[in-house]
Length: 158
Image 1 (cartoon, rainbow, N blue to C red):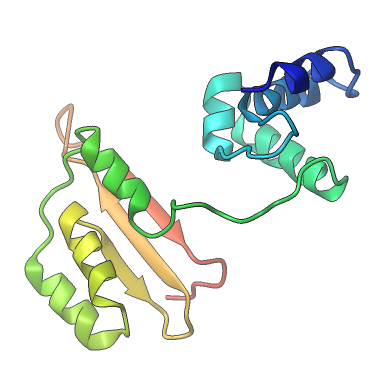
Image 2 (cartoon, rainbow, N blue to C red; image 1 turned 90 degrees about the vertical axis):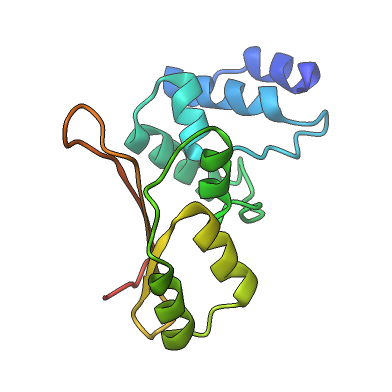
């Protein structure tokens, strides 16, 4: 957290309350030089209570305007998030071991990645063009309701 960056942002006008709220949240996560902001759009959304499309649109505007620089994702792709959910007590239904045997036979997935997916019960498909589709389900609750969590490659056509 940088008080210097947060104070500088607090004194400025940003054109809208939404833009200021997101900048203040990001300033709170920054190092003193303004770098090192590692938080997801979901985290911003959760803490600011703004809508998903509002946060995404505002971040896109910040990136386009040079206010933010995208340095890439950090440790949250293809299973790491599911591992964090698992550590927090998210109890996904057990996936048949056969699913992972089929994945190993059909796709060129590294063995350590398959083991991580097996450990947290992630289902996976690939379209053969390098795009993948991941699914994770919650246990049923309130009768027959459940959550489905998905991640899909931008060009997935499966």
